[in-house]
Length: 425
Image (cartoon, rainbow, N blue to C red; front, side):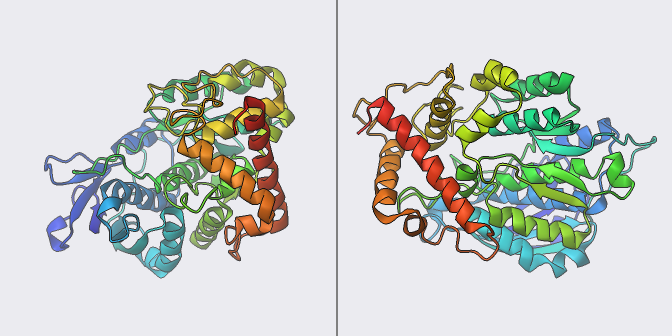
């Protein structure tokens, strides 16, 4: 699928594409897609001044999200792998074309698709009409509304950090994000936007495997607006997620697709860090919990009182919207969440649609994710963690492999302990 993503004044007729996407603007042509106007408006409204290449990274991320929505996996030869030929307008096309192979490698690992990316001139570089705001925060943190990012933000504040919270608004979580940012540390500066990517004839449900790149692009964009960045310092962007989900190993051979996401996989963060370094963007990506399970994160959180009060209000479910903004209780993220609460030994007040997983039918213990967890636990016990993980950690970009193996093993043990306690067989 050939897709061109450029600003509203670009002459799209000069490139023969299957889909044209207008970045940072509205379109009247129903055959066109659009993305990013809300982000532009929020940056301008807040008088922020991001680095030029951070704008370019955002443009790339918006293009990837648009392509992810437009590509129909079911129409691909193998029912999964898509091919994209993506053209994106940026400020520094020479730099990005010189590093296109790195970009393609990152996107291929992230989405398991085949990407060809080229860049053209004409990117966005807005400048405030008045003196910009240079926030005094000392770092940035992604605040999704999920449990891990909530714990991470609590720990940062408890350690004396002053983070700028960054959120991608998701229906059902927007109010939580706002509330968490307002309450933690007496109130955090908060950048909260939606990419508003829309394309005609989008696949339903969309894979959204590429959505990780937009979260990270927001974080990088905001990090480069800080006063410390403008004075020449390096800024840390905290991307907080437990090590089991960061690796997210396929529990069975059938879970190689969309059910095993790669948002904070070490390969993704390593490749993106290489790209940031090459671009001269002084932003350091850090996941402080890559060697922690979710249960360990809960037990070791520095602000236990606040965590106990609000942990159940966070969102983890992979089907939260599908079930009327209620946790299903049976998908892999829900199982890991419930296992973590059980390991924490604190009350889990989360409302789960399917609470009693001991019922052996297609809605409870017989559900595919519950069965996959049981199969994975059994196979890991029989094969050992190294053989069970197989090639999951084989990339040379993954360091500390032994510690990551142990983290995954402990995470799987938490799930096993929960299922045993619930009487799931």
